[in-house]
Length: 372
Image (cartoon, rainbow, N blue to C red):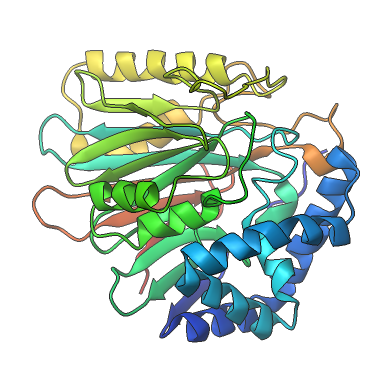
């Protein structure tokens, strides 16, 4: 049975030094962070028989990596822990949850990057599918920090990098990949997302990730700026990159589309239907592009109603529904749809977010980033 949709997420505006940003994050979202720890305690116990102290122990290796590779981000994590009244390893564990017990969760997201043929504007969009138990613990967050563009993102409480964009028109979407091995000496994926959001261009974001040694687990980041989108299939053993097709768009779900790098093992991911969703969104895009002129003024509405609301092959559809056959700790559904826009004419970047998975008649309406 699906859980009722909670109220829209809070708007959290953070600014200052890394420690100041972290402290305010922890103070404002302390209750949500505590709930997140319980969600992941239950999830790790169900999927891998790990209690929270064991999860924290695993996090120690990643803590050392963060201290070494990204000391400013680690300082922010320390601030979150202090503000929330928790041990720093609790917050490290939340930020590396994708690297632990990888592949045992029923994650499944569908993403699209598209440079529109008329205006040259770039659209970056995705459905984010995850356990409904985290929905009450999410926030729409802005981060204003010296030396970096201003960030706007949808994130889980306690996590420093997620889905969103910055004032330099660099945006990111995330698709989990189920693959092994992991490497705790490299960047956790949520830290890599924050590095992207700290960057003034997509190229500089990728250059920075590579300069720091790459990522700790196999994941896909769909990154875009005003020049267009790039699908980055990242892993600790090498990376693959997929450029937009002749129509200017690239799509992705939850498997290596470009083929797994040598040494990466990608088991079958039952119940996620990644190949089927990728084929479906490609079919829908072909129909949209082949239908003649794209009405760019309402393109985000069109994508929501014609692509991201699609329920073909439910429950494992582009618009994901909960599967009641799965344990409640590992069920997924679409929690929100985000559509970002980066203008070729110099207009400020923006995003529209539908909270929940009722894209046509959402009672919550459309949320906006930036917000007033």
